[in-house]
Image (cartoon, helix red, strand yellow):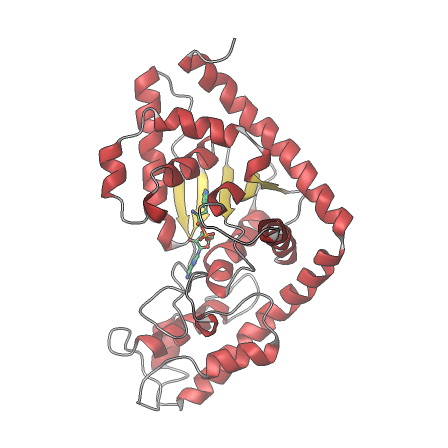
Length: 329
Ligand code: TYM
């Protein structure tokens, strides 16, 4: 059975990198899923508390994230949407995994946050507690996923069982969307410059202005040169992910666009086309986001139902895990 799991931190409204690298891909996987496939999407609030934030903000960010997930088209009847902290088995499995995790492996990882070993172990537990088979993520999560597979090997070997399942990493076509102000860095929530990213809630004129002022170079005509012209390449790449019919986006590659339709055109033409397509993509998402934010009771019920389903799924695994480790009664 195919079980799809992914997570996102509730640290503000998602940006275009989250959208193209993850959320849009989740929605596509949901729409293409067979009847027997189960899907889980977690708002990982436990992961989000590694950074300090003003009182009340986490609660707001979590609700915004649920509204965003609904706005991009996740359907709670098909996809289980839940807060990580409402399923304590995630934390329980994290502790159990940490007891067989290899610290040598952990210290060789470059991606873990804030030097916390517990961060990638909790992420592994998120996935393994639902026995997920497929995990759609952006490129920056690849190492964490490798580590999750390492946890499976260690646990199963230590206890002589095969209760945990090794998940496959599913990279989205837009696996690494770059910053608009520094095309050598990925678009990120933590970049201090808000013009480096486009938020799902940005108004049309804000989106256009951010793309128009995005960092390119002093050559004023388009060419495809990802090494020499990363800013232009980033715009062409964005365009390639947004170009084409719904469900068939990515019809032409960035290279095809840069060497074909846009070759030699003024940069502003490319920028305006990117802005137009980003706007067309995000406008309905933004509108639905505000609609869902106003539906308090609906949000509450999505959160409650999601937690119930996720607890049931996690309990199934934990029964086997506790028995193998000789925990519980
Ligand atoms: P987070 O919240 O930083 O990001 C959520 C998703 O967005 C993707 N992403 C990007 N993709 C392309 N280009 C970008 N510039 C870009 N920025 C972000 C990320 O790859 C991710 O898929 N540790 C995770 C959350 C997590 C998780 C999990 C994910 C916790 N448990 C279990 C998968 C499975 C994180 O911080 O993602």
